Length: 423
Image (cartoon, rainbow, N blue to C red; front, side):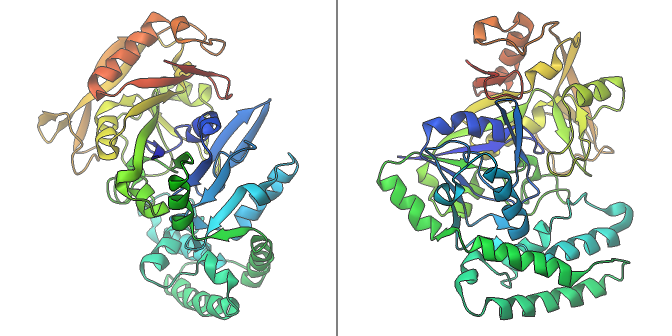
């Protein structure tokens, strides 16, 4: 039995939550392997929209166990807010949600450090969500962090105070005007910690490998997107974890030989939140129309997403780095009624035309080379089968498959779990 893996191939916000929700009925365990509450996975069904930030997207299915893996960073306050949001839907999360003891905790002072660091950068800011993700991963690699398993120790509060005091010294170093009430933040934090202690903590690497021996089906769920990977993304405008396939191994404690299918999720166009290079970004009415039709606002932050044409150079790069075996195209419905579609198939890079991802894709180095395709003038949201897709959309998909050399198995034609077409 292998672990199947689902991850985003762009700059995040591809629609991973919906697809995990759709696929969960085929799995016994859904395991999140990296990232923190800066991720917003949106699921929509029965006329209700749900946004999950830390909890795996399989939580709404009665049969699936949901694991928060060791590679995730957890803000107890945010997680408890999520749990309280589930209670009104009678979700029995106590029996369905388990936490790795090796997952690191986001402290209130991590969030303050994040804000101070970003404020000190001025115009050079990276577009942090200010959720404390970066400083928490810095403490992890610096061997200073506190983990879920530490909540079981009598010395937790002492260890917390030592780290928080270190953080306060660092915050003063930034010399920025940052107003905060730490005692109030800490009161909220420790109240949340008390509720977290009511959940089940596990040694997740042992749990998951034992599950494989028992032939239980596991789906690993990633957060953010491949172009935000700390190693392979558009550095430094990236997140602080490995969002690519390799991150599933380190974030869950499973061997690379246990990875089965790799599901790659991408939008039919491209979006990006925050700062950083974006070669196909549109600044005209077309980009505004994409944003409005696609409701392109961050699920967690509410920040507007930058929109542009599909970038096949970047997408092919993500497919290769992750070893993607199946593709799933989201938001095809957003491109309906565009007379002409453009797809970036190459870059003009420092005087030559290339088809691979270079070291830097800053606008002074890269100009996109486009291929034009016919659009489709048809509402897709009521379609239920692949043979109903307009010919222009089928041609669009065939064009992508030819360049990516991977089949597109799912086409999403709306936000609801029922608006999913299998090919």
